[in-house]
Each structure stands twice: as structure tokens, then as C-alpha cells.
Length: 252
View 1: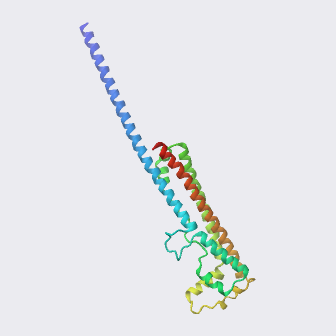
View 2: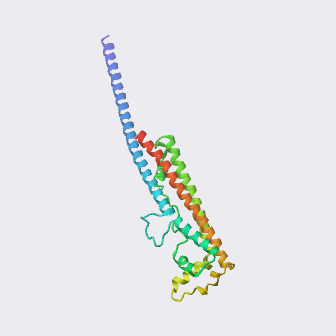
View 3: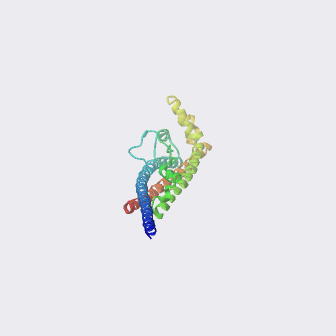
């Protein structure tokens, strides 16, 4: 009986020890889960705020390319798409009125195309989310869907932009024999430049004159499309920013 009593005590003691160990393990696991959740929560907050910053950079770039701003560098060489379209349309209108010698200054000095109009949108945070698999732990389903839709739209608009820019380049090839050659000759030797050396200038029925009109039309149309696409991206960026800010306000 004494032996049985001691065994019972030892058994209860052993069971108690096991229970304490299990409880300790569960507490340690829960602490680890809590620490990881807090770290993930903090990392996600940082990523969302960085994405907001990238959206602002995208908006600023689209605004500058499409409409220009006071911070543009090399303003003598760069014009916005809006300004390039206006210049091209002005020249096209003048060709239908009949070019005159007084139009030469405008042709030589005004830009018809906006340089560097490729989108080149910022997307490093999205790429990080995809590469690390963090996109689907970032927040609500609404947030994840909004992020995916935004970058899909940007990818699509980038393809459209490149196609439109190719059409714009085709337009400039159409005017190579007319004003492009005239501009080159003027830059090479302005002192001996003589408008009489370009008989097409006053001949609305000449091939070069008609190619100029067709080329200007292509340039205008392509750049107008790109400008609208850039405005749409600014709107897309605002929409995603609203969703991100709502997520931060609700869950962070």
C-alpha cells in the first residue's frame, strides 16, 4: 500500500510536470506568434506608406510629362505633350492656310514632339510584394485587389503608350524631307540659310508639303492619346491611394 501510495504521488508529480512543460511551450509559441504578427504588421505599414509615396511620384511624373510643371529641367529642350500637341496643331493649321515666310521662326524654334514621354512608372514596392509573397498578407481582400488592378492597368497603359509613341515616330519620319531637313540645314549653316532653297514650302500641292501635313496629323493624334493615358494613370493612382489610406486608418 505504501508503494502504491508513493507511485501515485510520483505519477501525479510527473503529470504535473508534463502539464507545466506543455503550458510553457504553448505560452512560448503564442509569444512567438504575437511577436511575428507585430513585426509583419509593422512591415506592412511601412510597405503601404512606401507605396503611397510611389503613387505620388507616378502622379508627379505623369503631370510633368503631360502638362509640364515649374520644376522641369532643361526647359529649352523639353516640352510637355500638351505643348507639343498645341505646337503641332498650330503648324498644321498654318499649312492649310498656306505657309508664309513669317512662319519660319515658329518652325525653327518650336518643339513638335515631347521628348522622354515613356511612362517609366515606379513599381519597386509592388515588385517586392510579388517576389516576397507579402502581397496576400498585406491587408484586406479589397486592398489586394485594388493593388493588383492598378499595376495591371499601368502595364496595359505602358503598352499603349509605346505603341502610340511608335506612331508618333512614324509621323516624324514623314516630315524628314520637309521641316526636319530644313531645321538641320539651319543649325548647320544659319548664315547662308535661304528659304528659296525649299520650293515645297510655298507649294501646297508638293509631295513634301502633303507629307508634312500627314506627319503632323500622326504626331498630334499619338501625343494626344498618350496625354490622355497619363491623365488616366493619375486618376488610377488617386483611387488606389484612397484604398490604401482607408486600410491604414482602419487596421494600422
